[in-house]
Image (cartoon, rainbow, N blue to C red):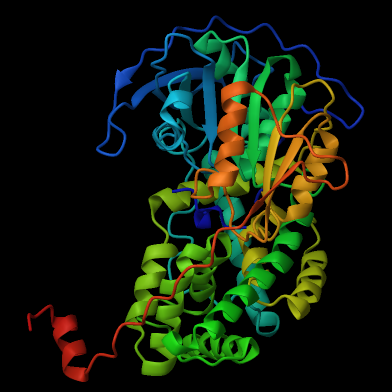
Length: 525
């Protein structure tokens, strides 16, 4: 699912390269002799929001099985510890795959209690291919420029356009980045993490990972269990479903969460005037979708862009009030401007998004097998769409380049682990991006782990986001290494209540024709 919607603040044939993977029955094999690591040189790169931020770069092998071969560069950031005694590095990752983590170091250092943050060097990084790391991937600039064809195929011609677009993206990646695609994968990124640890001179690595970052952390822990310190994993990818099955599970979960949003709008009828029956509100949303198919809002928002705009509401209910206001303005007042603004705020792609998507596809397509027969995609997605229509086909096209990927897929490692210290797992029960079952699955696979549950919570990335109960468990763990333990009567070792629902925000008042004209001409009142 689209990593741009995260809420922390979301062909041609090429010969596959050699990347270390762990078959289900295998133990980690010894690393090849590594090249000497140069000391990191930290320089100031403060921002107004993060005045203590420092930056450095690290050279790592493109192919970790050939450490004397070609190098690539990772971009790192740091907020240094200030306490007399340090707990060592706390590496942070926001997810994706394809998410930049450079500014996340400043965010986490500022969001943790000062006495806890003071004991860590909080380390952010752009994973290989991402952002300031080099080379940075950008397979097909403008791939998401509006207005795209309707995500739900209308007959054979609509499906053909979608398939051609997905194939074109895969071919562009192969032509532009074919030399590095065999090494853009989770196992390689996890081995980069260990190179970061070594460059920092730390015997163990502490880690806070969100979303895809939980899978990255679990893979690292399987590769290097003896180097695992305090690992906190928030909003957990189901490691048993990477990646085709996990995306189908998302389709059902996002449809359910969209219905939760429609029900919330119905409860706020006094504000939004869209009806008191959730089914009535949802029907109005789909009528809006039909309308923008015929006439895209603001010349930018067709059905696919509309789904992109409302998808972030499935990650974070804090977006609901303004999304609902744009919805209401369009339906009740025939005013497309708020809807266009919501698209620009939440979904419009830029160069950063192009890079993120290029890495997303590169990692997911390389990590695990995807169906190469388009007939499988067609049947599966129509079956799911019949039950969960909100974003199923949108998500299918987002991942469809994997059907035509120019590099062979790997076998995902088995991340079952009985050799690590206690790992803290945090999961909301109604998370759509990483459904609850993933947190339970990883909890069962990692012996001694502790599962903290946000009961009734539907957001994604839930620690350091306003829930004091969850944050107390996270900070206590980072402070002491101790995890909560339940009484064995349920999967959860601790349960926190969800945050209250957001309060509504009134739609903008309908503008008169004269007001609209003044706005278009840029004239004053």
